[in-house]
Length: 355
Ligand code: TXA
Ligand code: MG
Image 1 (spheres, rainbow, N blue to C red):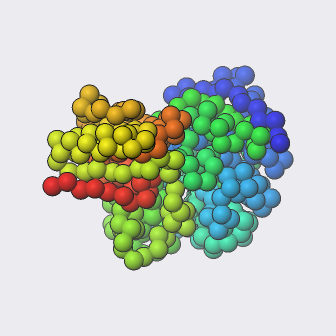
Image 2 (cartoon, protein in one colour):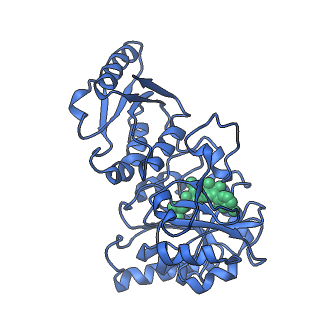
């Protein structure tokens, strides 16, 4: 067992103080020595190791309990480092100019500097330049290349708060940098630039429409919202039953009043048969439900609030040991596509549609 140190650092909007900078330098040193440090990014917390050190990547898989064929994202902090890990093409330069630093990951052919352990044996590499000041400083202090999956144990929702990182990683890693609650709350958009036209493998804050303004043509992996497409997802990580709460989750969509009626009826029936029922509602409908645990995930007027709270709500329902969960559904357009993609995965695609 390792002694995991938890150190408070600044959030996204402020620069680290001199004392916090010292802590980040110390975290960078841990990474250089082959250790692991969890850190905040603008999307979710990452579990960092030296991306160019195969032993560090092995340790990441071990700490997460993650299958080692599921590749890691290499995080950089400046553009001139991209060619060190990836073969850069025109599309990559355009995308980087438009969206970096920020919540976008690109897949490119890898260079020989990146060990096969980091890419799960693939000839391609995922690269992202995060905008969070703590992440940027840490990557710089670590030597420029930090492999970081989300800092959850495999199969749990990605952590949006350091306390959830601690829950999953205490004793398994050297340090957690606690930058408070992250902003976006869902993982970065992943775009594969090794295929033509480029293809979105995981939806996120950067939407297809935003990418289409920069690249002429962009496709989206059909498996993102449709489990019956008969195809395997192209991002290996998307095939696992991810982001799963302990309770059995069902999404109920359709006419808003009927959704409330359906959920209330079933919540009542389920609790009579001994289940502890949780409901994922919105600001607009919070007062409509009668169930043991009712939580608002955000407002329908502001989908970024829903993304921001979703993983926290799933974790809280676990903490309350809810055994059966009903969630309202959301429009799968724009950023909503990322929200529904994660919710569908959490529900194992269990959806009730009411006309
Ligand atoms: O927002 C994020 O991207 C966060 C923060 C920490 O930066 N990281 C993150 O990493 O979500 P992770 O490991 O949880 O998800 C990485 C996803 C997985 O689904 C993986 O299969 C896919 O990226 N991926 C990585 N390298 C790939 C590659 N070469 N080809 C296809 N998919 C790849
Ligand atoms: Mg993850």
